[in-house]
Length: 515
Image (cartoon, rainbow, N blue to C red):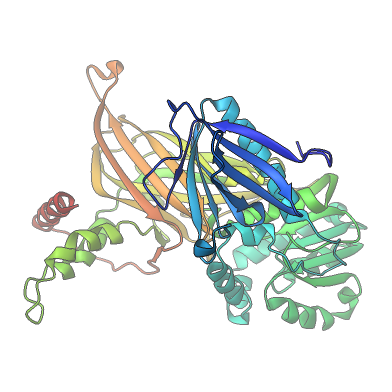
């Protein structure tokens, strides 16, 4: 799809383009003058220009600084940090693009991807282990402040120690490598996001011919020091400080090894880097450790957690706080607390239905497929009670040639530093044993290296007439995976009175009315 050198431009006719800086639309579907979107390369700058076909006026985006986000089958948002307008040179600009049909939408999206690759990829080739001075693919999709904080966090030894002391995690990786020595012996290995270099040394211990430990944070310097202190391994390990998206390697890898999992498997968006490494460096039929990931989900009932979450906002119910009425902010505070996913370890007996799972195959998944993950939900309640939300955890498979080993973060299994995660509904759903629950878990990636979670759960009709379908109750919530509530300890032996629940439900009804 990449345009040949002789192809100077590519045009698409759009239904409409709306500038987000104003409420006006450049054109509408019924306009006699359609809007043209033109990809071109002008003076070595690859750009996308929008203008009406019968007008000389328009505006351009430099594709080196432009991103495209899908809102629907026929609608996208295009945003850029660079503009040809002097007044807007220091601001981000965005437009909403609408297409006439899905064929045009798909064609434009594919062309945008190829022209953007061309724009970002311009420049001289890089020496081994060096980083491009231009804006990389990683920089294009991740905001600078988030990346700075992320690499600062993982550049500290105390956080690496926290992960190394997760013996379930570290022990499983060690076992997966050592049990599959035949996959590593005499092979070239790339450690993606090497951190302290522990996985690189596991690979070397298993007989790897050479290991390239790629780490973008300051931890790369510590990794060099640690590896140098193990001289029998050091001669077969090269530490490269840089991003996978930017560095170059002198040879292809036979094996990729990484620990790219975040909360809910996908948090921190490291999995995208993992598959980019696969596309850039893994030889055909190469191995990936881990190979497959699964997100497990089940509805849960936890009255204590629900009351705890609801009580957090009661501070804002004070009408005379040093003479100030705080109640105008109660609804917003209530909504804010229920927008936080809860990270903790819980008793699996809180689950009210058998779990289901969503598979992510790291050997097949494309980077762009991580931008939006849509999981239809369907459960059958095994007990009567109130459903307070959706509990989630993950596991990954190390599909070795000798041993296939699973690593799990499931409730009831040995606890890891990932714990489990729960999305709590502000409006619980009542269910009966045998009643069907349906819904949707929709994850949308954002530039702060995380996801927005949209959850909807519905209880279907139950008992006589259930075969006719219909929904009895529906509840939904929107959460930011970037801002979880870390609930590491749970108070015990606290009885919840029915009067307390009735008072909280009344306050919630008031909050919903205010919203």
